[in-house]
Image (tube, rainbow, N blue to C red; front, side, top):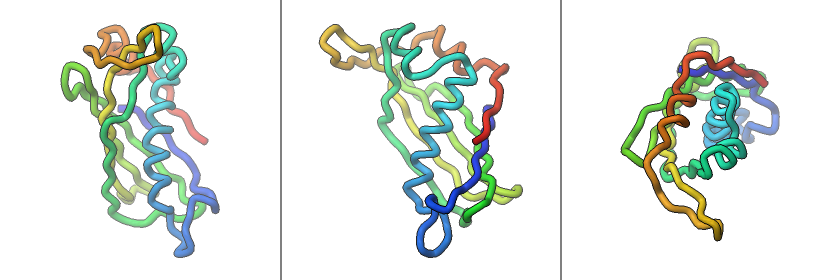
Length: 141
């Protein structure tokens, strides 16, 4: 499991003073990017090293309780192979130990051809080993 956190800013909230729901989808992706960096990767590095990208093919969120301005949102991230060519990234959002919501992304493993087109392929074993390593450093913002 990878953990990260962020402080909810004024601009993240709606008129009711709670987090505007599309921000959670941004934070899903941002948390995945932080996980990559903690493993010595980035989307650019994945493309350079493996000739691949990890497009989102599904995203989902369930909201359990509100988060508000100045709350510190703790995000737990776990990954699992979904199919040969896809993996699922699960997220758990909480603040002060209170569950705020859960979500997931299903990401495909897609190789980039010479013309820039994408073609699905089996998730690279070296990438998967790096992604699931236990030595990632948590990040905060």
